[in-house]
Length: 143
Image 1 (cartoon, rainbow, N blue to C red):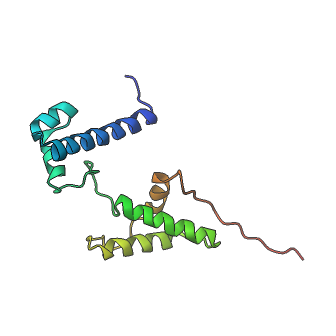
Image 2: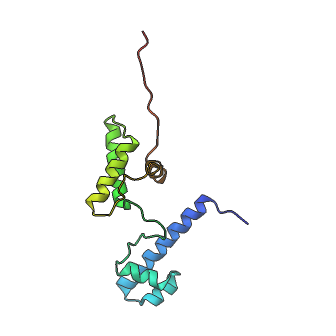
């Protein structure tokens, strides 16, 4: 069995999103039928129909749903970067509280507790191009 690299998986995801986007444009602008557009772009007709009728978000994937959308996560990144520029590092607890407030403000039924303890680590891992996790260092003056 040949293992696929992480890069190959990432490009497959990107290609899938591009295929759906192309098929949706063809259906909306050219008036091509759903079945024909699905066949041309290699996507399923039902998935394309759900995305064009806006029953499902365009970037939807199978599996567990994320607590925050991509736009909301981008906003959370901006808040984190703004805080770090001011010299204030956000703890995992603060990040979890902020994520819960965002989820509750949009009316999503968030879990009774905060997001899990692993959520901040997974969040940083998803956005490793912009965020890193570091431990703070206590500096004391030697007498």
